[in-house]
Length: 436
Image 1 (cartoon, one colour):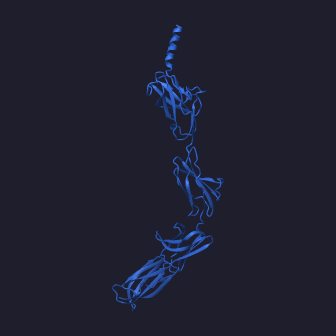
Image 2 (cartoon, rainbow, N blue to C red):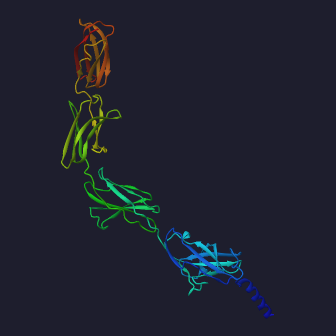
Image 3 (cartoon, rainbow, N blue to C red):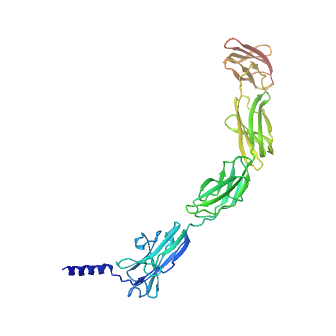
């Protein structure tokens, strides 16, 4: 009984493990080098009596290429790529697979072929025949990181204070970022002293360095990178940052002739001049241009008197827009002028126009809240009309006298004003001429 059982075991074992294939290998190449992303096609051949001799691919025969980062028995590997039939080579069937298309990370990889006929057990092919780990070995593929083309034509410009603008050409397609390197000084013979000041996204071609000092020499280069490698450096560039128009003060004083603006610069670079702008109603307007001093490290003083502003405006803003000879401009200073327009004394002004026809404007000023009357008389002292008869607040006032119904001649207008606290009073008479 035991002998019969052993016979059955051996019979079923022969069904599961009998191998119809007679020989197999990793045909070519035994080793190679590529950069990440490159193709790398490997070939393997297999022979089986009565299986591979007929032309074309043998029915029921399959092939794979496997790879691993460990030089171990291929039957332990997890990564297998289906191989396709390539050709008949004598009595052998040859298969191929693009191993490089399936490996992107740099490193060293070991590879071998695997074959199966129908549902029989896998067999593994090495460099000289069935893989055995001694003479018939796995192939070796070394994958280097794909090279990155260097950025070129790096340029630097400095037209604004505390800014350097860099531009370059992007010559690569596989970078993930750009690195900007800088050092103070003009020595570009070595990379010593350069520091990383920015990491930019892929496809970047410009960068503005705002962490520089004025009137200082800087050197730069850039390079591209990805997770695996760096590009060669770009060309070096060296630049002096500009001497800005350094405004040290911007002041004003209110004078009888107008509002006087004064400003001082400690240094200037390429300074064409200053536009003086004014704002009295929420809108800025250009009211003057004051020439600059080009390039200078001397202290320069400037003055402008504005005598065209609205005399009734209490709050006036001024600002300076500095312009270079190349057209570059920036705003560099603002002042807010507060004018106390409260009259310091009672005042009655001459009517305007005078002579007039048929109407004229009479202006007057009240330093205090006052009971005011303004009366018009004819040439013989008769009252013609009373223009104002009420309490008015302190400030500047005006009233229009319309003489449409009156005849030409000399008229008089009189103001009487008494402060509501009873402490101050004012009266005055002035002449005006109606001419029709």
